[in-house]
Length: 348
Length: 207
Image (cartoon, rainbow over the protein chains, first blue to last red):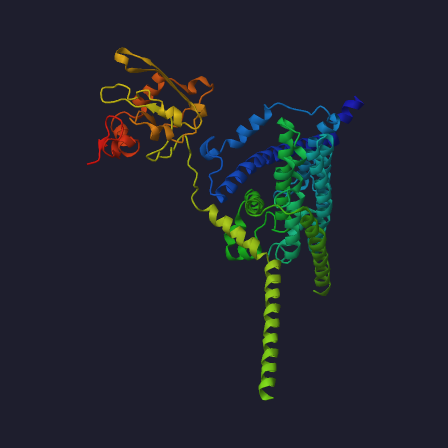
């Protein structure tokens, strides 16, 4: 009886209720994110197609709207090939690490005020940690594939991520100084205190460094050297096929989505509308709470569009140029930005 | 003296001007680099082209109109009575650069030549159209038909019967006549030789 009592005591029921709520939240966030990721690929192909005066996917469904689903089904039923000389345990593990680290980052993102799975105080640090962890997936896949293309891709990715992680971390230090917090919800709320309503204006240097570093961190053009098609076939996932390849693919797009979310939260004001706009249109203040997520998604998608836009425009940088940009321009620029922010904070 | 100093001073100002222009040039280059003027230009270009209509032609649904004179699948022409125009002279096969035309003839009644087999290996054809130009009777032709992909090699080996049925399929009516008038009119029709030249039957002699 004592045991049953202790199980059904008020405290444990409370804990179970909380767990249930968290699990439901996780399911919602992962489900919606994966759907967004699928349609991010569709949107990317559409945008790049039109920028190259093509149509993009158009045959499957209305304007090709079912293309991501068709692609997903195709990938799911593809043969799963594993190279004979691959390091099998690592080969299995690598895409899982990559995908899991990308999905774990979602847990600290506040999609609108109050909706966040884990409202922890070190949200931003957690995101950095997870994005560095994702690099392990890439490096391990390059090692385990036992193929020179994969290995080169993995090595390139390792050095690239290490170089740009610093620049990205430093670029966000300015934001942390202005907000006085590492909690992403607090950072968003802090931005409302400023006249511009977003840190992108006072932290324009940091924002610039962040954009460039985000492109490099997610291995996107013009810094897609780890998967440079013209040199390395497909880079670190050359030997992967079927669903394991899909995991890498999804992880990459999730990472893009997360970088866009960080940009939206830390620099573009998250789910809030800048104050000077609400002063002009007071109607916007009376928007229901659920519409905040729409504002947040609009900002995220604007940043995603920028990703695609740059991909359609710029060619790939050379490897030494990539390193030079990272170490000789971005890091000094970010340090200068920190010094500037600190001085302004002291004097004003 | 005066002239010399004037020259010197003008040279000095010239050099000064040159220095300032060089300096301005470097400043402008630096500004352009700092503000990514060229990258921004590129971004503007891609954004503009995003809103221009796509040039894609959705092929199986929208077919490109075939221009007259297109060189597609082969056909053997028929005359007004529905008989094959080919007399089996073998000129097309002799001209063919890839040697993919095979003609077998035999002696018929009254020693007339009978074309037993006329075969083209379409997979080896390069569609140069030399056979059409070589033919004195406009018997071998290239149609506008180009959608004849298949899963095996056999359908691409054209026999006489297939080539003749191609004529009925792709050159029925006015189209065949127009093609004959504009593109395959045998050289013999317009050829004028000198008096006493050994020629094919239909060739006119020069007056």
